[in-house]
Image 1 (cartoon, rainbow, N blue to C red):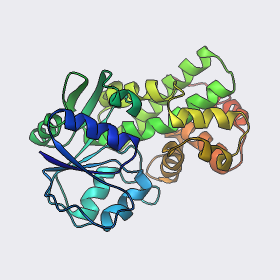
Image 2: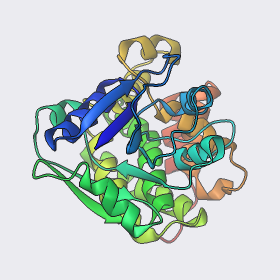
Image 3: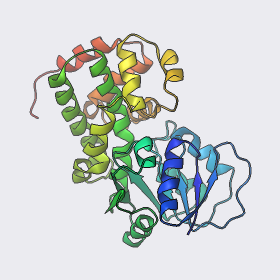
Amino acid sequence: MNIIIIGHGAWGRAIGGVAERLGNRVTFVAHLDSSWPSVAPDYVLLALPVQHVRETLSRFPAPGAPVLSLSKGLEISTGQRVSQIITEVWGEQRVGALSGPTFASEVVAALPAICTVASADEKLTKDFQSILHQPSFRTYSSSDLIGVELGGALKNIYAIAGGACHGLRLGQNSLAGLLTRCLAEMTRIGVQAGAKAETFAGLSGIGDLMLTATSDQSRNFRFGALLAQGLAVEEILPKLDGVCEGLPTTRSVYLNSAIPADSKPIVTQLHAVLYEGMSPIEAVKNLLGRAKREE
């Protein structure tokens, strides 16, 4: 199969290697490239920072091939998922998403990884699986595209919170409790958007959350830890060697009026820290000081 991957960062290259191990021919298009390759793709994979997706796709003609999103996040200006942006800009209905607990460096090393591939069309999902599935990169299928995309996007927010909890030295009890409530919040937001609750108990939900909210391999986790140490956002970003998707995703979810404020208390407090000058410890006090309620 001929596969074009838009995005030449660590994650795009890692998935390109996975596809090549199955004998697929992979061509990369970088974010700032001005021309489209001459090859006619059987599939297009999208591995761009989410805030660059719309502008990048607008520069290229619709390829007329199914598109699998590898990007995890939400567009700030619209709140849209990546699959929605693809359909809106390119008019392509054959879209899907790959998500799950994966670090690029481990995928490159062919260490075992397990992901979820989702689309609304069962055959299309299996087609996407066929270009990636192998013993070192096991894929499960899902028809819940909304849930899989939202899980991958929202966990970046909560990974910042997990990093901040670590940076504040609040202890393992605190971290476990925080991540449990993060899972409840992301499930609540997802269900309100039309996702299935059980999706968030899977690889793209709790699986990805556990990985990125507890490991310093995660840029979002490192961002939160440095934030807790008193560094400003502008000081932290150059230290990450990559994009912190949780930063714009927090903004997008906070600004989305379709998500009631009482459904996103952790997002609201994190937004206050990131964009309104609140200290991380004050945000912790606000969350712990909320009125008692049922779980």
